[in-house]
Image 1 (cartoon, one colour):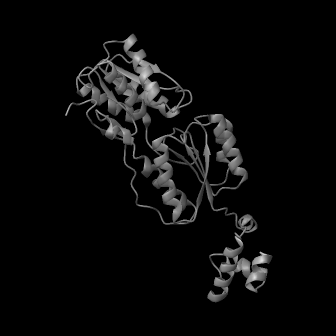
Image 2 (image 1 turned 135 degrees about the horizontal axis):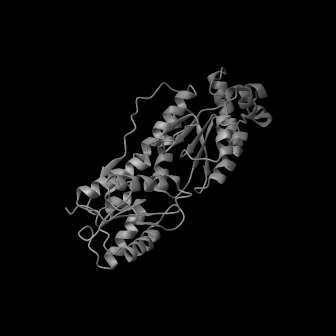
Image 3 (image 1 turned 180 degrees about the vertical axis):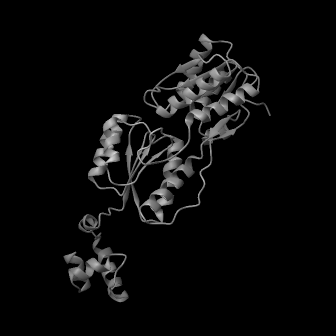
Length: 330
């Protein structure tokens, strides 16, 4: 700051005032200071001001996967929604681990975020305690927890899975399987499985055709190996719900290589409305969970809770069944 002040011919205090958004410094002086700062590569250090005002300008966010298209869309919506508020995201990657989430949350809170956004409603007890005592807005997204910490924005994965079961049954399919991953880590995948089983039980249809393969996020490769195991054990299976569109694409690829007709011999559906579901051949029946708007709605809620904006009229859509060629021939 002393170097900038010397180059601009002003005092350090004037530099400090000029580089803040609510400056009272004259236009010409401010321009000279900004030019000097630009020339020297100087960026104003706001730590002291943030400490005094209790505003750090960032929102802590945890996501379980950085290569999952749905979470990428949610993060995009969150970033776009916060842009006008001047808030920035400090991102943490949990790799579907509750223990890692706890570690990240503890580190984030040491940096005094203005709000914390976590993915899902299942946490370690210590993580819940840290979030409850954080003293800032806490948003749980992508879920409908039974005991929310503060506020939540999401949907019931179990109810969304039941939509797919009803679709299969409406087509006359009754030998229905489920392909998922390690549900002990992927709690949203576990909820989908629970919804799948519960709905089949309600309809008095066998709900035992389940294969869990690989750590989350489940990939195309797990889709291939899981369907192979499923058909080896239950060769008469006539429909399969996959925990994601990627695993559904892998399952369909296995069918194509082995001359199994989709959907004539077996109907296959995914979850998430990934881009791949639209371009696959056949196109993949899936559940659209409005992933980007989850992020936008979360951003609007955070900005409103922190006083950066008025309440938003944005409406979050409910999970929607998208019927395509993999379950219904065109």
